[in-house]
Amino acid sequence: GAVVSQHPSRVICKSGTSVKIECRSLDFQATTMFWYRQFPKQSLMLMATSNEGSKATYEQGVEKDKFLINHASLTLSTLTVTSAHPEDSSFYICSARTSGGPLTRTQYFGPGTRLLVL
Amino acid sequence: DAKTTQPNSMESNEEEPVHLPCNHSTISGTDYIHWYRQLPSQGPEYVIHGLTSNVNNRMASLAIAEDRKSSTLILHRATLRDAAVYYCILSLRGSQGNLIFGKGTKLSVKP
Image 1: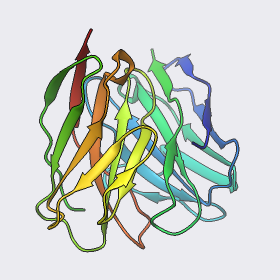
Image 2: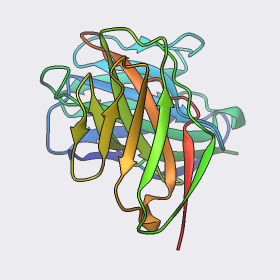
Image 3: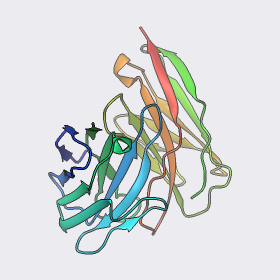
Image 4: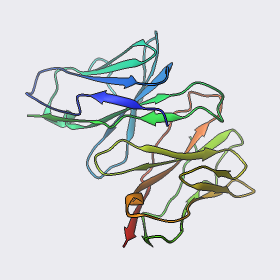
């Protein structure tokens, strides 16, 4: 399957600072990428859908000014958690969708980024 | 998005087949059925997806009921590395295809 990477894999930061997480599709181009968040012992929650060259679409309840998403190229999307607070500590996972028709296109997920805000 | 219902947990013995059920009684004609699995502290891994016909790949088989209101993921010979949370997800054809994850089934594999 296609490969999606995330960087960093783990980050610890102080409350009030901003953290940027990168998501890259390594061997395919992705016009659409997705950002998820997962709290311990819970399922993944979709935060936003990111389309290359346009503004991200945020799910209800997700603050767009707090979670800044940039999808500047077909292989890179970034999520910036601005003014992070301890309640933002979570496992952030991106996915990238391959092109093609609905029967062939597939979402591939990155390995996740563990964010701990002190 | 239509919802799916899966058992919270299942157990299997190593090298035996595993049938993971999923009910999606409110599925629409344009919904695709996706299966992903997630190991602890990792991102989800794509397993298989289909629309109406049964599907096979190197990882698993997907059996879709004729009325499409249920499906079964089949692991032909479970290994210890198959222990994970398995998610059955519906996505709309022709839409952004957003995947909305439910709670999934936690599969344990005993040696």
